[in-house]
Image (cartoon, rainbow, N blue to C red; front, side, top):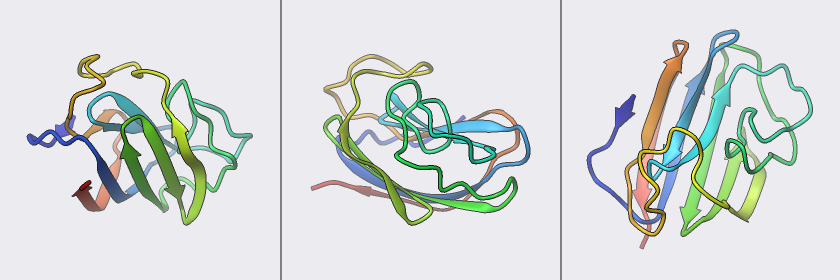
Length: 135
């Protein structure tokens, strides 16, 4: 796990990730809400697949590239409202996350928290990570 030390209430997170075959990972927003990163063959969108808010919000469509190719994420979180642009397409637009996802650092949803990168289900590569605190 890679985590920032500063806690922030609102943010925009952008990055690229490359996932080898059969690997999974996630980006935890405020340490509480996991956006799924994984190798996926482009099956129907579901709430535990790539670009989903794990267990809660499914992407509207799968814009996934092949295993090992760089995928791009642009994620904005304001309160509990999240927008996810995945590989240039908005797949979740201003939807409310109903609660914390598994693996959350804590359950204090009203408080700021860190971004952390999960890395325990295969070797995930990240690059071009930008975190912009909200105003």
